[in-house]
Length: 153
Image 1 (cartoon, rainbow, N blue to C red):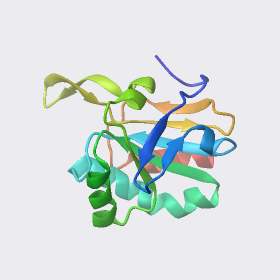
Image 2: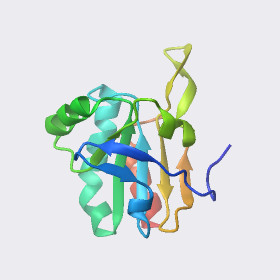
Image 3: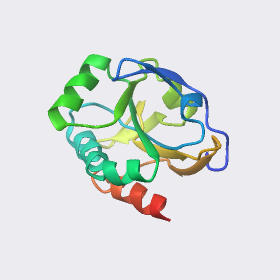
Image 4: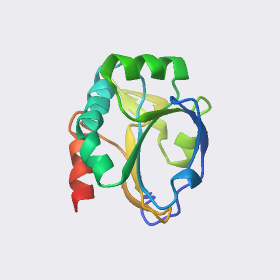
């Protein structure tokens, strides 16, 4: 079921910058929220580096980028340092935000059904409505470019 056109769920999570982040804090801005399974793993690293490489263009067009996983802030900190990530990573240890955005649930990994973080992305418009959703991202390394393409309109 698509979240597009629906009001984005409010959240309050601690960020890698040491502050609490809420959707309200970004009212009036376009926010890219990407959900990923685990810091410092191959696919997640490629995806994060893609957003890093596109970051300046995103910021220049007034877009906020937030990465979300259930990893700890310590793990986020290492990930940011290892790959010079310029954006905030949010820690969602109880997966409440991921569940609200349909980014947590049943998925297939290595041919086996498992429950966990579903690599997905939403773009929340300045009015708090979800403009675009990628419910399942297949190719992590290509995804940041897809997001940028969409935002360029």
